[in-house]
Length: 187
Image (cartoon, rainbow, N blue to C red; front, side, top):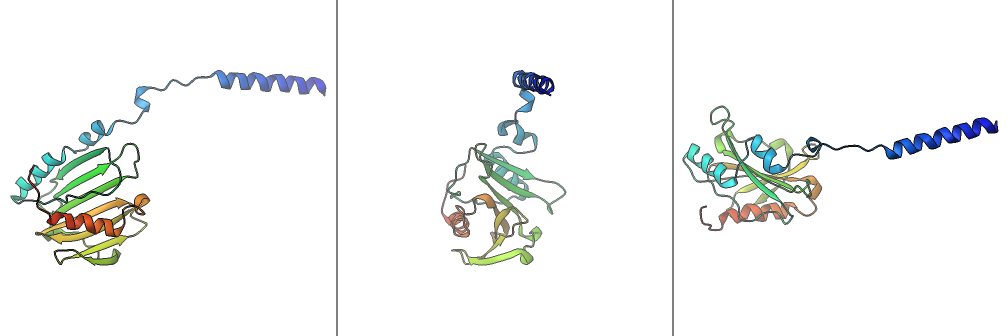
């Protein structure tokens, strides 16, 4: 019995020693691709460039808010999606952090005649400073809290990751929406 115990103990020590000495070589392909490389591969570019493409396509100015959520972002990207005519054409501004991926804010804008209906998802309705209604959507199945409103024949949809909704509340989203009314210089 002692003999078997010693053999098992020695075998266990050998196995532990082998597993502790095994090293894993990480290849550069194992690390995540930097946002600067990944986002352009899926159609994103600078916000200014995407905005210019969008405005030229519709031959109309698009006003963006001056405020942003009070959380940190490391990257800003824009994308103009021109898929199949005007029906699915939209401008998207994405702000994200490669340090804190939950810090993710998006603005999607599309022509009002092709707006997305949100009526069955509305959690609350707010009045913006310009008198228009802003629909607040707080539905866990989306993973984002959203604020949708119409202005200058555009539908704006702000989306914020629900993991930061304690910092970026509906009031903060309303403040961001109201900052569109402030005068700003173009480009």
